[in-house]
Length: 338
Image (cartoon, rainbow, N blue to C red):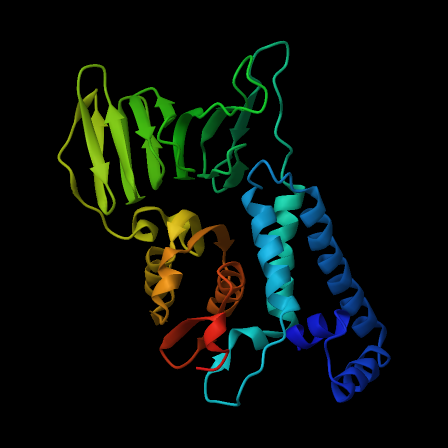
């Protein structure tokens, strides 16, 4: 139903489909509100297209909204089959996409340089509470319970630049945009973490700093010694001295509040889909090698497999289907059927 409504609003339905939607729309006030909400979502996506400065890469939220709008503007022709196509996810899936777009639209606007100095922002969570923090460079941080994070929002004297640094007491999961010329730094009482572009969890107390790296690599630096940790590894600094680097268990086993949460930051599609498969207990088959070059920057909290794949396939402009124990991803040029 969701895709049918998108095509209806873009005047891409057949005569029979148009009559069917007209009858449904005129049947209840709830149906009229649903169609009106969807129209506002589409118009919002168009407005975002006009707001993007072609000389500057758009924020991740704008990319997701634009890709989703493109996806639903393209009519798909499918054969009936056993697999349940993500494109038929209905209004619930469309609402999930709308919710993701709304989060980006309502997230706090980045502060700018004031009197030539960077503006600091502080985020504090109570016990049992988490918070999402978006940085100017597109990085995303999920602050854990009972924690404090301070970020610098701009570099002094350089309008439009980003200060890639933060201080942390407590714990947080970081999805940091890559920038080899300016590594991201997290300062804690127990040491410093230097990041080139990765996803990782930090837990910082007075004398101990531990890290679990999901993707990329992180260097922990104490006063006199340091250690580098790569994807799938974990270690800690205790009183400034690094411990052994060992294999890390799945992040949701290490950090209970990460259960149901997925975040990707310029993550290769194959890596992201491996994590999706592990999280939802399914196989993900990427049929077209060209899709392996695509990357994902997005996050989900407590979403179903169908909701996740609806957004992912819109962003990479692919056709996805969910069968029994397998998700299939194909380039849209190959057709929508599986």
